Image (cartoon, rainbow, N blue to C red):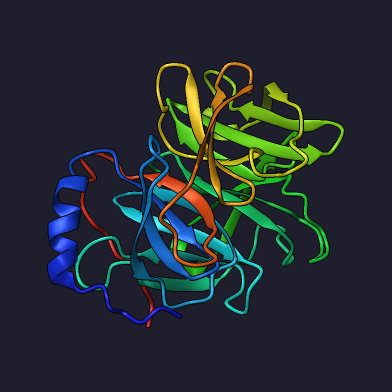
Length: 276
């Protein structure tokens, strides 16, 4: 794991202007490092080690703090809070293992916040299942307790909340491509259950969008992390069609990103949820 060679003095100079602009975060899961990503140029800047083995990561801002859902590693399936300011930037504060809400230890694919609840898509089946077809909330976050809200139409592999809607992506298979869902107008609390469209599957996986970021990139597009963590992919938010693909540069050796979250501006109060 990367040693904490990134000190507070140098980070303060770098992060001060970024905090006032659009700052996107992602996790390099091969090096377990928090990165800031320029979604226009594709340049990723490592800023601090998370100090825990993170595997399949989803990110979301919730009530002034950055949260990560992780699974597939020795750290287990948990919700972690990621420190984004100060000397310990990148450090992951670990919550309890996910539990409740019919969850039995299988896939929990993604998280998203509507401002009042941190929500996730997950499987209600045994640990060999990889279909996140349930929608629920995690509250209190540190306890990892899931409250089931309802069923999803697709297997939501990546999810976000922006513009008053939950958005979800289902990477289907090599013949069907991927699908884009959103929460029905007037009832966002049910999660992304209405199909908008999609596009054909990319056999290289590189330009297959998986994890959409909070907020619209512009009036017509969402920006997503590609399936291999090597590209940013823009998709049309009306029909799910893929458009510009931007290669990610600046990663550490062997790096690959997972998760993509936009820091709110202003960010609001910084809240730490942690149990010793």
